[in-house]
Image 1 (cartoon, helix red, strand yellow):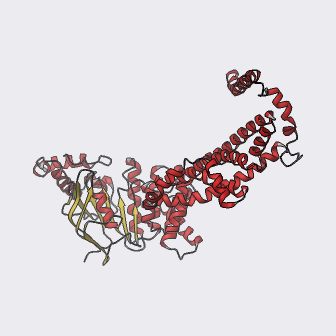
Image 2 (cartoon, rainbow over the protein chains, first blue to last red):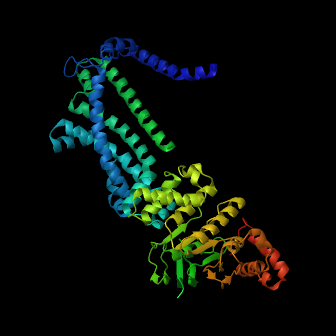
Image 3 (cartoon, chains in turn purple, green):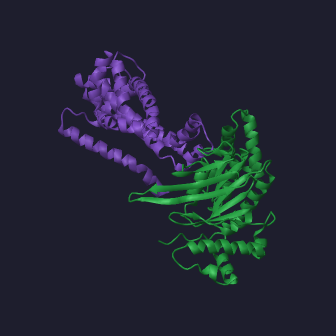
Length: 254
Length: 292
């Protein structure tokens, strides 16, 4: 009992140590606000999370909401493209051979590189941000779905053959259920990337959201709010990952 | 012409080093409604031969004709039971069977497909387990589902690939008897080809036994008729004179082909050969693969 309590408190000890390091650093660097000053200057955003005082001066929940909506749109667009492509590449060695080198080249491109291209293509910052999120977040879904299809045991293909299942039935009754766990692993990783991209794209385009807020507060020299934004981004990213992880676990158990 | 007629069937597989012939110029025939077992050691090429008969694999040369029609793929009226059950884990027993019924009779309304699948599961004694998934069923029950799936489509030809190979001896025996019952109670005659490594199992179920000798390439021995009334029991087979004659013959043919030894079983006394045969044929004991 005592041991399990200590065990549970260990993460808090870790957080405490990090705060200590932060505090020590703030003593050395005059521009870096201490944890306490950060709280003092940021608490209005947290205690009144839905307050809208101006275009960028809004409660943290509102800012997070704008970012989350944008991420959801870009992420859904990304997986809507990546999932069918993953199935296609999974069943067709010819398509894989054709597009694999291209994929390998496009995968490591940074969101910061896609964004200007999006601006050229769409002229507006909002669709450009969606474009960047979709293009960057689709790869894990594409690769995992593809691998999921390839990992289908020969037994299941034999069933499809022996029962003379139609292509469509084979797809819905065998390929999709067999690939589902892999797909969801892909979705979880894709969502993580989408959340990374949103901050960068908001900083570049100056749209309201957690990333936009961070960049604007940097420009207005309110450094405490930078730290607020960073912590917020981290916490939301963590929660998103946990939620997707839970969905994934349910699926594996089923 | 026989119901199933295979002539000049050859097949070889490409290995990294060379082409390995598995079957060469094999001929085989089965009459309508007959139960024929192909008995041989593991790795003798009998699985390959069965999948060629069924149309799962195309031969390099030769033809298979079933009911006057050359085989080019799985026939509409054929069913297959695999050694490893091959059930879909995300479906219940009922859904697994229903999928087969739906594929065989797409014009049937869904509730009738379900009813037909339920009947098939009842026939194999799984009325109480229709809503369980394969992971919640024992090995024997899974294979019952697979057998129900095969019979639910009312096939005229049935291919059994070591259907009881993965089961323990007791489960194996009850399932063998159940299969025999299903075959005799089917509405129309079902022609069955089974491959197995157990001579006893072949004796229990078949009208004819064809030994397959490991190659490469494998060759088929001459078929032996089993003229015993059905249903048969293991206990009766152990004492029956004709059964022991067939057993000796099959095992002698198979052991003669093993390695490069003299066919001792064929030259030794009948009693010796019979004892050896029983050793080799014992329920779960597989015949050894050919020595290189």
